[in-house]
Length: 287
Image (cartoon, rainbow, N blue to C red):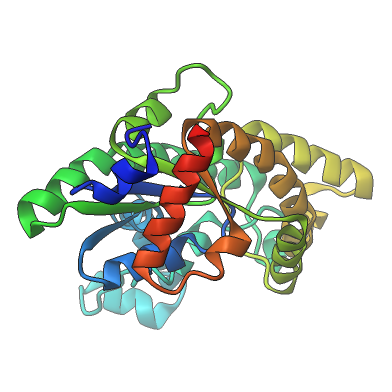
């Protein structure tokens, strides 16, 4: 780790941290809190994916749908309207909408082949966005004079790296520049995330091998053809399995850094309190 002790972290003029873990446990909350202090640069991996690497794909998808409407088609063909996504750190809906859900086209789903194509686009984009982190560390310092840096990673980071390998090019690069911090949820947190997802299922990225296996198992279990699959039902069925699949991968990643419990994070209200909590986590790791 780049900070050998909690004291070294506390006294460092350049605190650099990457939060990872399941979506919904506080990564963006903590990163936003640090940014709002004025002393930290907030780099969002999902925002970078949705703007730099998949922004054109997202906008083209909007235009493709708009072209189906005669009124909008005429305006687009004459360059009378402009269509773009309004993605923000807090609102990643344009990216999620582009990823979509596999299943019945009449129910708003995508053919599985097209769905996998978009998943692969996301994988390449996420890896590129993660490898851009060093550039943004330098950019924050040289352009804005900000030394402290927080990388807000997506929940799928564990799917685009090999956390069990002795060496992984993405994790190796990140580990050189940042302290990796896992926000670990309990079984109760996982159950709540599943309940929340069940109420409003959202598209997300999955490891290809896991996704193909889930797609086959779900259809065999329910005796369905591709066109008979309800997209929302499938991703609800897949989500809880994805969380179980990711947990050991997060845990393996945490060997390179430190762990904060989601229950600890929930009690944090100030940047100073968070910085002290991370210092204690470093000392726990070293003891």
